[in-house]
Length: 457
Image (cartoon, rainbow, N blue to C red):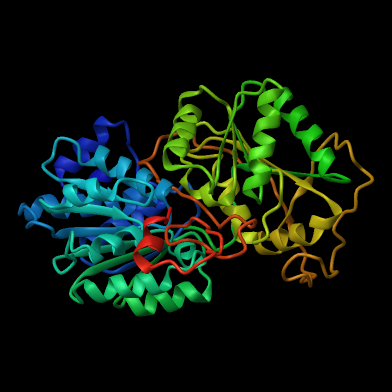
């Protein structure tokens, strides 16, 4: 089996990651790292939990170290763009581990934090800058940095950035980066919009694909409970959590209000619970994630805005309390479990009103999700095969689907880390997202452009 020493990385980098306990590259790392080292543009398609951060981060760190030159004041050598604050923090955390005991400087710029402090950190120049598009443009407006020295550009979770409406911000940023650069684009899905983005930003890219779009993690054991109504979901979730007291669970809902209400209910019933969604401040989000990672709490209630930002080892259960309105979000949600060779369970609750959404998910994944054993609400409506539904894309394909099955593992072998982050905007916000993935209410009066940016997530 391939190891990191055979991918073209320097002995310094191989030794660094070995000290962190990483031994074998994941498939996306094995395919992408040599291409990045060769200077090729790369378009990477891989499902969650596959190690995409190391796939671009390790070779970029290696090439920066080989160059050896310090960045000039206010300049950036490597620019990594991601859709949400959580993902930016996760990426930077992993890159700092890989670059430990090197002179490389990794900075982040995100909304919800002091822009003056970020401006001060950028003054001396930055080797690797991880940023959300909105806050980056704010700092460019302030002339806090320049992008004319960028050698490497990475668009991570590109499909999510398009979902959140960042296309115009991306075009603006790309116009400020030199044409002579190396670009990498990574995405969990590959809709036509991503293919169009690739043709605009990348030069004759090598496509690296680990799993086809819509494919769910093989080691996730999926099941669905059919329930008569929303009230049954609360009771069923309490039963599930009580039956798995040692588990670590993420519960996904569609709206911020629903997530907060459920979190308070579970907390009042003695479950160690926190919530993470668009109405939470940056500090509240970080404290909730830290408590979840350290085991202070074992239930995290979340909306899709945070789905791709949660990279916590040992998540045993993902509950789709509300089915997502966009089928792709289901794939991202359940990717929070069964990571690094471990098994995991993804359990969905489906009311009759959500049957069309379930059909959309099964059509996308090509999997007929198994009905949970011991289902307490057998009378609830099931989605009929080959009939239109109430969710998006209601006409079923009629093609035979394969049933989800858990598969064998590789003994929990550890791979180089992957950063993930916050998914689709909360459906409760119907006036569109802010620049960094935070939905904002329609303003009562006209606000100037700079003030709007400062309020972005």
